[in-house]
Length: 341
Image 1 (cartoon, one colour):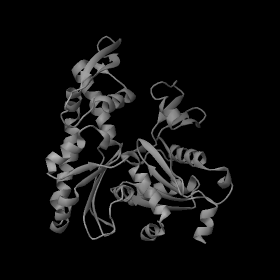
Image 2: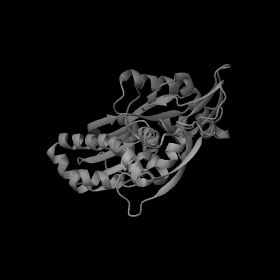
Image 3: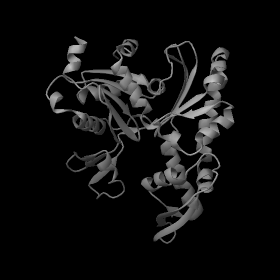
């Protein structure tokens, strides 16, 4: 019966992230990755734009339109906006063959540190958005499955998923999470740190999108072989006029130092609490980084220096979690281990 329903529905794996939402369609792979942003008309309470189109509106909307992130720190902050966003993405990935048949099963990744109330909120939002069955999986487990780690074997694997709203880390063995740590410190905090640094040092006010661009282009966690520079445009806080300054990667590294230190200290805590037998496995297997935050230049080298373990960034780290949810849909053995909530 499960296979019969599968023939006439789009089963979906979803990484419902603070920064981006990724969707995996069973049998097709990852078909959508868009910003988790909704633009709403405050007067009519209607959705104006979702995803990439809504992101282009941030900081540029009139008073009656607000571009918002329905997710905050990995959990739902605005239920109605999140439901509309999910519904939009589900409709976008539907094929004509599936448009008027059975609702989809969904496997959705969630932070390992969320409460039962927050888990229930995710599930109910997905059901309202059109899901037939919803199963939730912790993000580090989904990332481990997505990058192909042997999660079901009696050996230790250490995964760190640095997303937009949370950093998830876990030691995994025998299909379970032995130790987890969930930090509400991640990519968004990197952006905020850059905004604060430029404000203090240059009296320059920049927006969220500009801070993200700086992070991507010249941000680093470890000294680079050749340091980078770029021109940054913003508003002078003293004169109130447009202003341009040139910043270098050393300055951005200084801006990110405190935030990176929080993440490194959490990694050390997990390693200190790891059972000795699993610790010996980690010496051989090392640490795998996933999520958009792992693309920060040199973050693997920083963690390797601080932990004395080999550290590798997963292939296509942005989609590691959603690929894991997709594998769970493709292989029924995973769904048996993660029953319906």
